[in-house]
Image 1 (cartoon, helix red, strand yellow):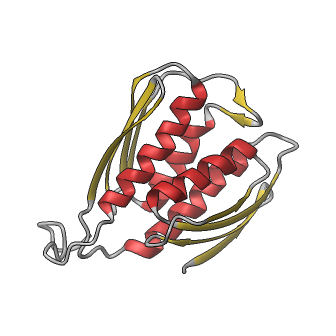
Image 2: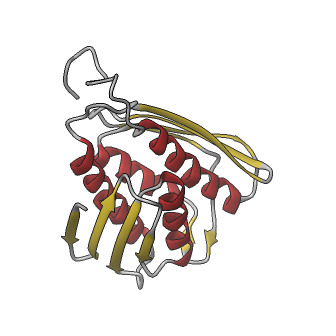
Length: 191
């Protein structure tokens, strides 16, 4: 299982990722709601994630959340490129009560990110609601995937953010589905 460590003046992170795991998560970031989201992400992506982060939480949770996205994205890239024998594209809608969020992605080695969610202010515990976007932006660019996350309906912040994490996880699981007939899933011959 690939492992990475990253230490800055703001965070100290050690993480490992198995993209074809069983959905097992050992997460400790000091940000309760974020830990819950990463555990849910692992479960629905069927990825095994071990992640310990000591961040400057006396400032706020921004650096912790963003830097975890960076490290998990780098581990993802380490695990999939060059691409061969996977579906490559994934899509999922996830509902949480009144909320529905869609994630569409391309494991393409060309990063791009679109986040079309309503402005989410306030916090869920110590997790600032705007940090959902920061996590997925950091993950997408470091994983080198094209990721679009789109809010379809709903107003509860907890439900919207959790549906975003779950839809991204499920879309990734579908994109990583192995298919021997695909070979290299590009007319370019390399991704």
